[in-house]
Length: 264
Image (cartoon, rainbow, N blue to C red; front, side, top):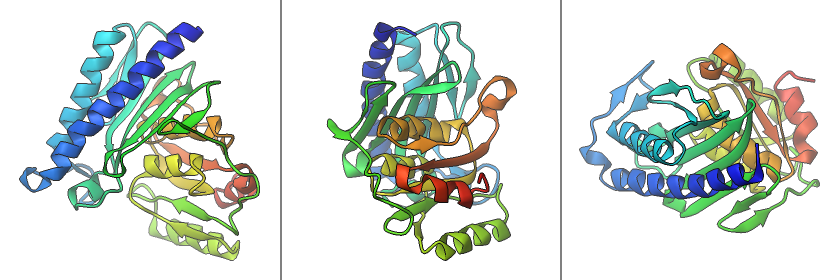
């Protein structure tokens, strides 16, 4: 991986995420016209907004970097030959999206050698763009992000996530354990956006027992470049399209998040 290769993709990823965010926002503003479909269960929804936004991202990537691979939530994986793979979720938080809530985002990541090296999260309803690249730091709307080590589970908020892959009892246990730590929690319906909030210092950590790479890779890059930590999420071979636990934290909350996730 060269600096020139990374910089070219970083600039493109920011532009692509902003364009995709504008398209998704247009759909959001006329969401009453969308036909909502379900996928795995009644809480797992999708619409033409998700599909067309991902198609736009894929077209832009293919035009600019035809040798790169691409993995997206709606259209799966296309292998590349360059060593770079774009990992995208066109609308993370589709349930809030279709219900008229602003807690959704466009997530665009680039991975190299199995690790996230670029992470862009556009939150159009909030007019925010989170951006990070390996060795180049993280920023929110151009302002550098640097995590405060004095923030802990006890004096901050922790994001949690759950879905049909997680049993109700395990969710209850997760909440109970966090409260026993004298912490508090929030869930806004978008894991990618809550990872961006960890990078911005709005949350001290995030834990979800089962997520896919397209939900978390952009957020991982943001958290790492802001000075935080995330638990390794393997994507080599068949693992690329499989789910795994997602844990990320500010420095002062890492040990507590590791305990919460059963890693310590």
